[in-house]
Figure 1 (cartoon, rainbow, N blue to C red):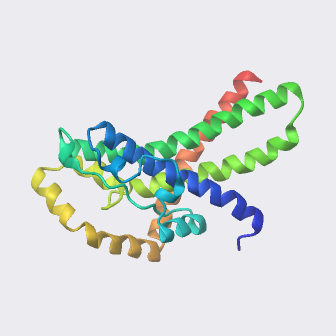
Figure 2 (cartoon, helix red, strand yellow):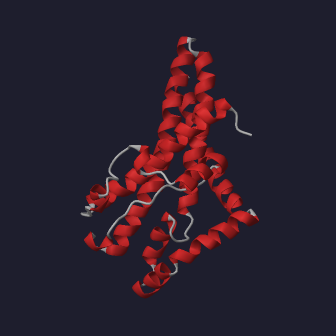
Length: 216
């Protein structure tokens, strides 16, 4: 069960992960010439503009979930499939950069604390926050990279298909959430996400250990 301290850590981290993810989609789409995100008020870091109640709750409780998708119009892109792939990749990439940034900041702070011999008490609390921060962002990244519509991974994966196959798959997007639910109920989704998160988390914390080792 969640206690107060767990909620105080998980809620703001979840809001950051969801908000920056959706903002990245909207920002990249606008850079590709699409005015839709700006017109719909999605080029903002205000979490209220991006939250989906069910997706946010699942993110807090299970580690994966979704926000309210940013509306984009691929008709504005020079290459629609490539544009959708780039916009789709922007969200997961943002979550990875957030996780990497948190590890980097923690590593620098840890080196300073160890060098000066002070602040070690705060370091343990910061480590807990960073671990949860990395876990949440990587969960959101890996979940959204699954190549099942309407997840971001499908936008990237289908870029390599012919136009005929691409548009056929997009027609069945509304039914794909049933597949995601089946994967979730069978435990397959947790296995997929867990494997991906462990891979990327180990990579990031190896970077952290090497960083600390270099400067200590």
